[in-house]
Amino acid sequence: MPGPCNNRRKKKQLTRRDKKLQHVSQPAQTLSEPSQQLDDLDDPLDDPHPHESPCDSPHPYDDGFFIATPNIYDPGNGPRVRDTRAFLSSYFAQPPALEDELCAEFAQEEVLQMLRTVLPEEAAIILWYNKSRATGRVCPSCRRLYSLGDVLPDLVQDTPKFFPEPRSLHLAREQEISGLCSPLCFIMASFNHPGAIKTTWGRVAEEVDDYTWELLNSPGTGAGDQGLSLLVKMARLPDLGLGQLCLPDVDFESEG
Image: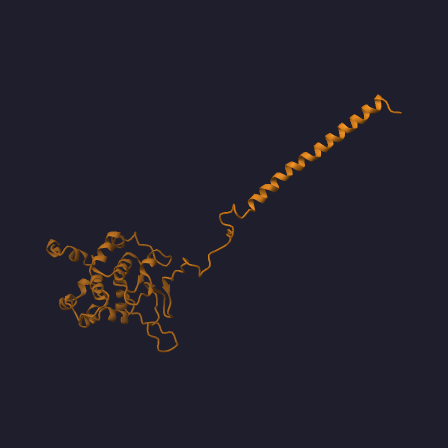
């Protein structure tokens, strides 16, 4: 039978139902906010690089992509230096022998700068490298990379077999003096002064006679040798001749 108590019960039930509905509907609103943020991130208009991926790498044939040429190559009879400037900063270059007093003197950057004033760039760098390293050498003629004491393959291989060049005292000394790696390379470097080849091979300045020095100081045949004949002469001198070349008016012999 309806009465005041029944009305109160109905109001309480309606109030509880409304509270439950509000309690359920509120999380639904908060859950919708992250979904909206994800939609904003996926919007291509807001992404400055919509097609890029952290794992993407440039295609080797794309514009602006450069594949560097290796500075070391091997034609089959030993590694060669293709780019001397790049070689100096590469893994293959030996560091200067600073523990050796003479090598440490030659390793100074000022020495390289002075060599560049009298020799072509390639020849200057190779002579500077050979004189400032204990055993590392680059042949000025064929650009072969080697170390003192290595048994080197023949530059001219007429047969498929491997024939190492015979080790001689003059060859070992010439490799240490100038870095020229073989008799053939020494002949090519000394081609401007053919009369001085035999008497210069494997000898330093005090071991070269006066007549040979006259030949080395003469203009020679005039063949373009990229500064090799001058390098052959400079390598024999204890200071590479930089004193006389850079200060020609000073008489170093009279001061000594």
